[in-house]
Length: 633
Image (tube, rainbow, N blue to C red; front, side, top):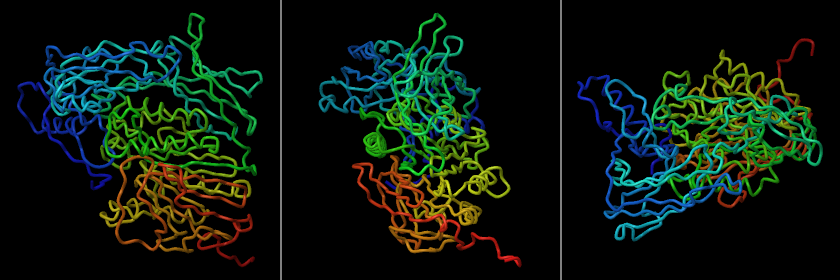
């Protein structure tokens, strides 16, 4: 498969049941857009598998003798937020193209479809399934017997579920049977907490999802030092509507009500102490609905000389442990990355996921599923996110790139589902300190060039750090604003995002940024310490003494289908690896920092380097990072 990051294949199909109206040029444009976003089975990287299903074309075609059953019908009897369901089904006229769709809410046939435009009649089904699997996936004899079963995992998503058997494949689905409803005992229960650094070093935020609006219950967190008196802190509540989506499929077949998103701020934490917490909702009848209990370690004091460990990755996406929704290479990459972080969680203090978070691409159900996938991580250590093209980009939405990559989301789910300590969450750029680290997180989907608000933010973030307290200065962004030898950049005649590093190189060099890291290119690549396209120092496993130039690292192999590299190798490209993986930074103290690139499949270290530096080395002059000598000197 040839990897293309930006290009999308267009599958031209017309929505079913069109009214008898003249096919004007405007109408043709509408048909093409609906087909492209909601019904295209595009090749390449980053496409959402649910977009393969032409749900607009679905028809009802009951098949005598066909049935679908699912058990158990009631889930979460012991407080579980996810459970396995066995689905059995039969079709007297089976085909290899038959498939099972999981729908939620369960009454998907009764949905009222909003009109998309004046030329197209509302479709029979206006909601894509939340997952699907072919009927013969684990049943090799299905084509002969017409009988099969699947084990599918469901997560609590605030609504019931039903299972439907379709013939006609994904491009021409015919609904031939569906099951009764399956539901969790309390579908509204609070689930999937995700921690984040607050705006001050001693503040942690807790964000979670529930089915309880403020007219029904009051959200809060019970928390405190383990074994001591607990504190109750209120939570704010947000949600968003179909109308806040910018286009299809997010506001059409991909729409699913996100429920309510709650955030509480746990303030005045004592450094390094272990805290427990539990989210809850006080119902107006006086009862309380609790989530599970979790714990986290409070951040260290800024500049504290202690062991501090940070994981950085990009482009992970979500995958299904039951094998459904399978596409490209997400399953082994995404789940292996997630599982490796869970295994090593005791040795991780904070995680940065720098863009292309879920690849929901306008299918809103996938955000719940992603938060469930990372719950063991995000509920225990801060899970900091950045904005990527698959979160933000949409024509006419103010994004720097006018492509369709967000599927009409235009940043709204990402900005609400995860907290970041940004002054303006719409802008989604921010700085955060952790012990000896200063992280400057840029948003490549908004303009970063000189004269812009983001450029001023980047310079302030880099220039305001006290390097005696926080010697390790890290720049993070989604698209490669530095250096990459990916073939899709080379095809454009560049080794970076166009207009990427030109305006930022002087800032990185002047303020002595140790490492700049990016996603977007699905793989790993490390440069030598490089400035203005040339190595200032040779690539090495050890950099000692005064700063020479920034080392650029691409760490976009979190789970999405892998990129290709150019055959010719640039002088600045020191190590590259076409595989799934992530980076771990370990600050041992103020003078020694270790970077390790680990494989997702087994956690083995494939590349590493150490920076060894005293404070006087930070002060030392280098290339273009000291002021000119004056007469006074």
